Length: 117
Image 1 (tube, helix red, strand yellow):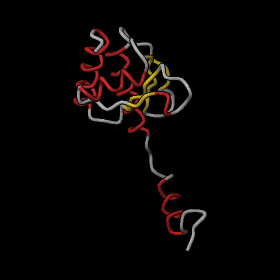
Image 2 (spheres, one colour; image 1 turned 180 degrees about the horizontal axis):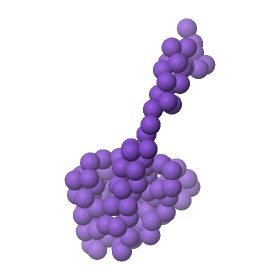
Image 3 (cartoon, one colour; image 1 turned 90 degrees about the vertical axis):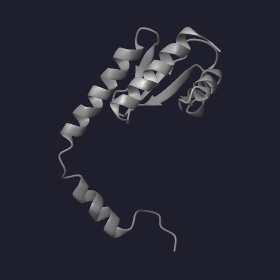
Image 4 (cartoon, one colour; image 1 turned 135 degrees about the vertical axis):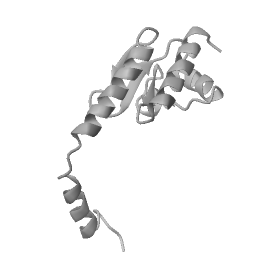
């Protein structure tokens, strides 16, 4: 069979999920967003983070592809912006992680901003 939409039982489950109060979760993600902005805003130009759990950040040096390669070499996975558009000037991070992981990621990003590879 080929489905062009989610099966009927899955649609009912999705409808039930819409009745859940997620305000606490939304506040948690706002706090994570603010944490990352606080940690990175002195060295990076940050945009995005208005409705999802992602931030688009301008690279402090090189192309986004070069910067992301350096991040990966430092055990930090970030995505170059040219995956999402034709520009290779920004990268994307997700802040859907534990705060301790976010702190480690921010530390690596701040080190990379100061010391181009």
